[in-house]
Length: 189
Image (cartoon, rainbow, N blue to C red; front, side, top):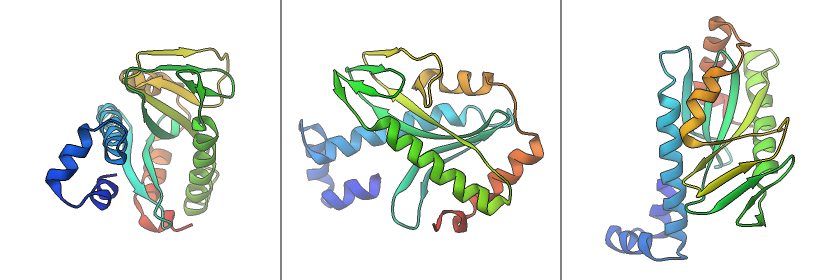
């Protein structure tokens, strides 16, 4: 994201001014970067408890994965979504922000499937990946789903919820998947 912000405005002084101007592309990207940093900090707190986190993983196509968490409860692709001061609602198949539909669920599910294929190929075994949306700075988050296909959480609850899930992977499996995830060749597809 930092690279994109620099591409939009190379001049650091003008970039700082645009960050404060409502509706600017730079402000939008800067808000996203803030959300990613807060999510990253929460995931980094899991380290040392059998978890590993990777941030801003680059696909060869230029797209990126906001965060990948690998631990006893499995592998999670985490998208950070900063909706400062807005009302976020999540039902079975949709997320709305201030009543407007988003593509958050579909995008998160697509990304998790793509990551699963890449890790499964690299590891030589099936590696399921569960999509997660980390909601940052929303005024209110309402979840109305008994069995959500995507885990939607407020950023401050991310570590507690992930570490509280039932273990599915052994420490050796976690280490193997983490090694594959750290290898740039995994993300060429």
